[in-house]
Length: 169
Ligand SMILES: Nc1ncnc2c1ncn2[C@@H]1O[C@H](COP(=O)(O)OP(=O)(O)O)[C@@H](O)[C@H]1O
Ligand SMILES: [Mg+2]
Image (cartoon, rainbow, N blue to C red):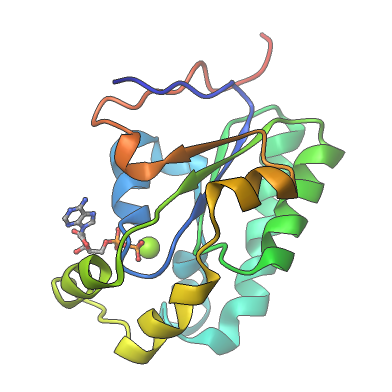
């Protein structure tokens, strides 16, 4: 199955740690389209998990997000986006730039996230995985918040393709 997204849209990945967000983003979209909060934390502190750098990482992400949406460039936000106020901020930016905003929802089970978490270089503490469980929204909730469409991550095949990267010509 192939899922297409409107060119120039904002695509927000939503899911807990270890769900496979970065893996999917890397597989499906060019690196320059993907704004990854972990990368900016790592650049600021040499430690992608250093939460003290989240404010500066979010500032960088928002700067790049505005730069891209202003140009009509398709943009993927690779962060957990589990907090409603974070999603509201992203929706507000897409509205400001009049771009469609979609969510890709990772409703990956805790067991699967634990399994995948232990298999990677930077292991997230189990307590963090558990604390994220009750924050994972339903598709209905995301639609009610204002996302134009919600696609389940496991429904995105290997061939998930976007329409042209830029709005217009
Ligand atoms: N669909 C999948 N099936 C099995 N393992 C996966 C899958 N998606 C990701 N992984 C593995 O799980 C680990 C965490 O994935 P990652 O993309 O870093 O998660 P996130 O960015 O959501 O924290 C990685 O080692 C990755 O190779
Ligand atoms: Mg990641």
